[in-house]
Length: 336
Picture: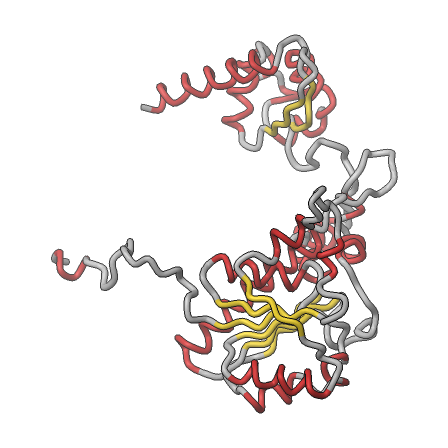
């Protein structure tokens, strides 16, 4: 193959000042976290995002803490960046008509109302697709547009519990715990933005019309936990809480240093374990049959974590980092 055949048709880097999604118009009819997070990801990459807010109440994140002394809601500040905000009451006929006009030349519309709400307002999927067959419509809800729970409201905390994430968080002998952060909503937002881009690729590259995307909060979280579903299906084991330790690798935990600081680590591969054992002056454990490979170490995870933790608690954070970095540098020198 000559050089001409090997060359790329397009350069790997571009000198253009344009962002990759410039020219893409998105109507953000969502509220709170999931849908607005999906659209802010698009806005960050150059999409024109028109954010719709209720004339009286605005988006719920305008009242979500933390709010600065100057009255600035920081969640809203983050999730509304790069968007053009307008007020529109979709529940009134005149508001619905304006919404239809906005959708006429839009590429994407995003909403996360309870299923059936848009249909009740006369702006459901069939209506919008008749106006603009090329539009991609992302519909986020707690439990999907169809099914027995479709009419139920759903938020991230509920999705995390129903998907099984809440059951994984906490101490071994303690109750299930929530992350204390809207992970379920944010995960759904990530899947939403990804799904939009896939639908646009299908429309613009492979050829075709727009399409509707039915995205449930709990399904988004569950997709990240399908390894647990496989484990139950194949081994009839339920992945349970394990505190700060990972259930699949040892050593792994959160350790406190001599000066009261905290660090977290996990020996995810055999080579990391070998370097870690040497770094904490426990080379004797490398040849011990109880700790030879990860399956053996998992059976003795308390002992392995204890050995690592005992060394860390005798040193300051600075000393620990210096020792670990020195071991890494020595390993890089060996690789060269």
